[in-house]
Length: 268
Ligand SMILES: C[S@@+](CC[C@H](N)C(=O)[O-])C[C@H]1O[C@@H](n2cnc3c(N)ncnc32)[C@H](O)[C@@H]1O
Image 1 (cartoon, helix red, strand yellow):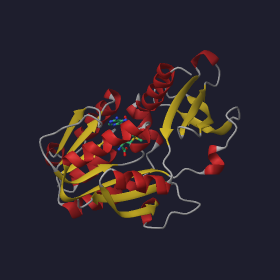
Image 2 (cartoon, rainbow, N blue to C red):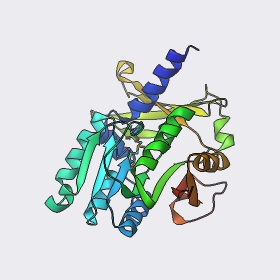
Image 3 (cartoon, protein in one colour):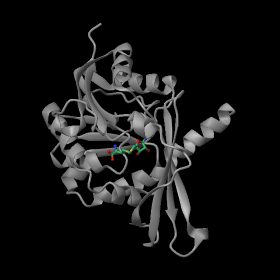
């Protein structure tokens, strides 16, 4: 496949899922453990905090509620619009502690440093190539104070799941979509390229009565195997402080969903 076609697919797969902030918040409303985890790290750090890929400010608003200043960077306008709505529901003091900026983490260069940089919930899974990943780490290095921490989580790749037949439909339940309130029949298709470690999930929303109103949303994520992730951190100037399975401090195991990493700049 031509590079530009790869590029267009990746671009669609990194944007489509984030083109409706209301749907995003509905889909992940039960995800709370990570919010607590990052909020506790923010409290320990005393702030200010830099969040790369702030999304709808799901995590940032909790951090601001704890009295900590946070700058959040996000490329997708619909996510930022939703974040702005969320901010309106905070106290004036908490709202004033959050600064939202539109931008790409790979290119971000602020003239300040932070004792804590975070990238919660699979942001790093959207860095598809080695160059993307190196740019991401460079951004973190640029913004961390000496002794500061970088905390992020990515999916743990499950070799069994990655081997799924791309033609097979995995049915979910019925999902009400905030766009029109209709309950769509939800299913997913998974395809994985073992050479690039990039997986695309096609999220299929089938309208109950009108096929014309059915739609499909791609989500493209680059997987990181645990030892590979530690090597990438090492060769990009970081020392791993902890690398755990999910947000309750367990070792990485067969049932782990997220790899949760805390790293520091490596002494030169
Ligand atoms: C699963 S969401 C997580 C959002 C938020 N951190 C949270 O915990 O809810 C991944 C986010 O990463 C953002 N993202 C993807 N590529 C990015 C990039 N190059 N720079 C900054 N953010 C990016 C997406 O737009 C999306 O909002």
